[in-house]
Image 1 (cartoon, rainbow, N blue to C red):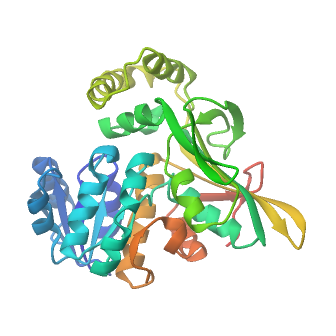
Image 2: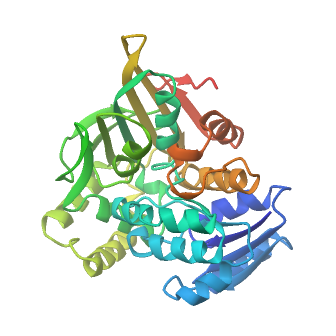
Length: 372
């Protein structure tokens, strides 16, 4: 298959490109990035299968021309509240299937508006195939398929700041913890305050117990579209309490309530991270996610819990690479603007994640390896 990696030279995109380049089924990869020098360097590193080209997500005609003729586009151009709908629209117009790591709630909602357009074009466009959303959504589907009724789906992530790099990641965090954000409560989408609902959650042992709170993410926006349930929530948190306090201070001071302010604060955070990460750094930097599904089976209440842990680049872009391959292999037949829980076969997808080196768990204490 022929793949165009949009933003493929970025911090997250590079992992996906490297994984795709290692697959015999992928014969051609165009690394299309605004940073041409970085794209060219990555192409040289990976060999003759890869080539590079500059692309600007704000140039619609140029984007359409860049992706035209490829089998699948992998989208890692962030922040997604700026670019997801623009990039997806260009791929749909070009008739090219699309898989992205979009993790912004408003961008996911805007993406869903392209459903009829994608269906008319015969395009499979899947937003949010990263770790969260992505793995969390597929866990939700895995659990829901085992129950007769689903009452609640609670998704969560824990991020090690030393596991991150790149301004887009920081901008996403600021966006997720600012203002009012959507959560699906008692059968309807409601706006609640970001940062509320603090609780301690257990993640796999490499991450442990982390304080998490309501944050803006796509799971409450997309999961209720495809899984009948009463409540869907997303909570997130960082393992470094000092950085959480610092971020909350920026938010409380009103320094993240516009796109321009987020850009400025994101730059400050990225400048500080290399110094702050060295303070009390754990022996292994690792991030994680978990999904809890509660419902009924044979009229009995059942609680299922699944988790995953790895470095953030693997957590984020191994799922994307796998979804790109599954779409290219014809294993995803649905057309339209979709989310992972709508179209990715959960056990096959998770099996590939495990084979790729990602650690998967089940059970409330997150100590038992997931049996697929």
